[in-house]
Amino acid sequence: MVTIKIKENSKQAKMFVEYAKTLSYVEFLETPIQQNKKTLSLKEKKFLNKLKKTAIEMKQLSSGKTQGQTLQSFLDEI
Image 1: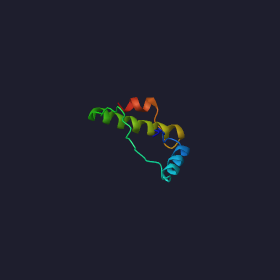
Image 2: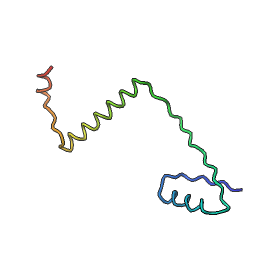
Image 3: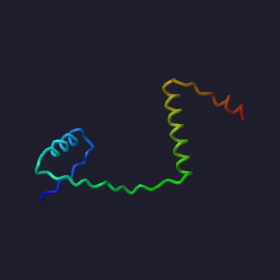
Image 4: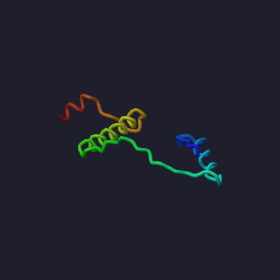
């Protein structure tokens, strides 16, 4: 028996796996990839959501889709 590990992160690797599945003498034993993912707290999730929204707003500002305000007008509001 021979064991081959294939990372399915490219088109060629996925095509090879699909081809290998058609062979009668090939047996697949898929094992889940275990990653050390830490579960986020509610506070961390909220922070990440705000960070994502800010990144989207910054992208819109830089591409000219939306218009920001000047520092002076922001300070005047406070």
